[in-house]
Image 1 (tube, one colour):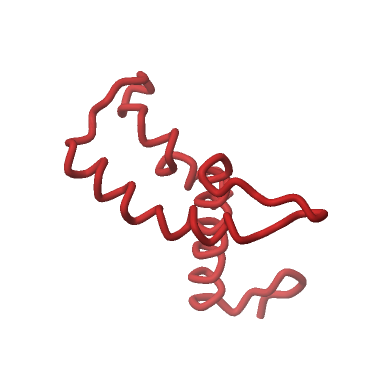
Image 2 (tube, helix red, strand yellow):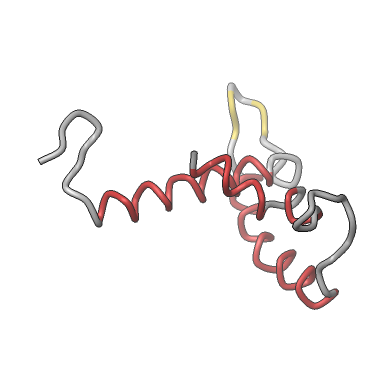
Length: 89
């Protein structure tokens, strides 16, 4: 669930306004800050391979952001609950 919610803030989801319309609603400075902050993730994933094939970090950016956002959300939940995948006490 955290993965899917994070898509609202990835490289494509950020382009939709609160009504779900595709339109540029961010200020130019916000777009530039987003690009600068995601460049490290693009670079990181550019160094990975799957079955010997290189990953294109720019092409997979939305999924990478969502995966990392979902993991971060799960981590924060796990730090504030006594539940595990199999047991709550």
